[in-house]
Image (cartoon, rainbow, N blue to C red; front, side, top):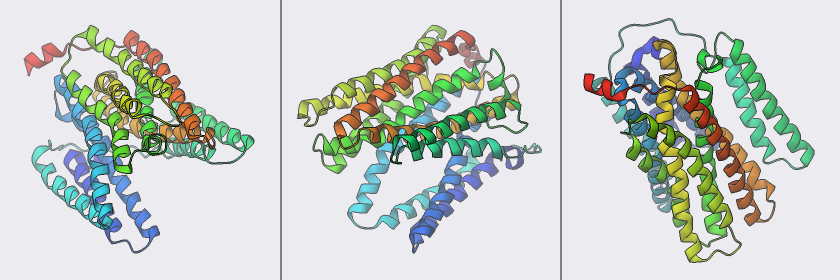
Length: 396
């Protein structure tokens, strides 16, 4: 899209699709039409997410890439806080369609600002074909994991998981040799840090999948009302943007390397602590203890995210690959959250009728996943050289 329409044109299309999908949802007479509108919304939102990271690469000097990616990621946290509040408000008064009207208005307003604030790309390139095979394999893998979480019987679940693993392996083999791929070619080159950067981002992003079940645990185990339980779940997403903005200005190489490893470490500690606090009847002090642990887990995502994103942008050998590496961050984020949600559903269903067991399986499972991120972050540090951002800042 960037190669054909440029930055401004691509943003106008993204906001236009998002607004159009919102209008379809607002006026939908039946569920099928509503789902169609949500699909159009998703296409626009996915395009906008990818454009955000790509725009940081093309519109800002390298010295501001950390702050730019931190601001983008912070908006995920803001959305997680504002979304439940708005949704609950509109639902409370029985005017859910108005929520989509608001989204449509916001989309149109944002589109109006794009030509004034974004750099205009005059040069146009021949776009590469869409990597259909790679996308189909990713969607197939995520679908198989989702199916594994809802089917009955160990044999059927095992088969679905085997299909998911096979799809991932075939995806990697195909991407390595394909002419059209989702990830930059440097990802598959020996000695490139991109693979470790992306794997660490996968671990951190997948951890967000835990929060979709936290309101359920808050209501059933702690007896919290729905609105309060919803904001308990949002504590994890709050830790992400707050911590990210605090470390966005860090420039010392040694500190950046520590933050990359500390991110998945804090995520693992937060989930492990929550797992140990799960009981069938939770007291108020124990419920309140959930909040700092959730914030700590979210902070683990935030302190490492921006510096990993910049590592991805600076790992590609040329500007074209660098722009693709930047846009691929959003692709990795989307795929990881999809897989994270699917794995979370699978772990919760393993608990059967015991919600306490479901909570423990979920949190301990993601503790193990986060621990893997510590190893990949160490590999990132061993293969990545951090640019001299102070020198770039002085030049700017």
